[in-house]
Image (cartoon, rainbow, N blue to C red; front, side, top):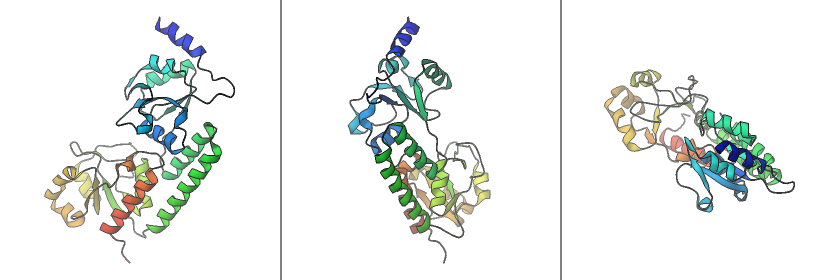
Length: 270
């Protein structure tokens, strides 16, 4: 019965010529990009993850991360699904592929690539002109930040995702590139895993000059380590804007706030 439902719904999924695209976002970052492109009017559903923007509170939900409501999704007759790798399971993605619904997937590894993907999405939505104006502004701001915060000797930074157990970010994560924009370097940028677990000892060996974490409580344990206190004492910093971990256009300004914090706390040597 469910298969029959899906097949019948699939027949209705193709947009008529001239009709606006019906878009479902399956990642909060992609939903945010739709808002930034002023394309939220195309959204007919979202996968929930945290508090929704006020403009989207009335939109139908198609579930939460790891709990996709496939029947609900198909009933909304989407023409395009916006994905972030990991926002749905491989099995669910296979189901969507078999249903023949078009998808757009994004996973930027740098801020420049993020901007390119926003530009590509705008074109896919038929909003190339307004999208171009937006990405041009983002590119200009990113260029300015790189020039303003460049350091001859990058600041060594440990970016702590969680403390028990201790997790950080690998070099292919877009946050690592954001650090480089600020004249800094992720001390674990040689690791390829997205979020590797590391030991306190390995952090000590990499001798960070700054430790960043999501809140003050996660930084407390470092004060017990004299080696860290000698190098990074006073530079146990809270990430000033958690948008730095959400790859959408707002990440450029979140990066600017991080750069300003690092520059004020650990000025470049002259």
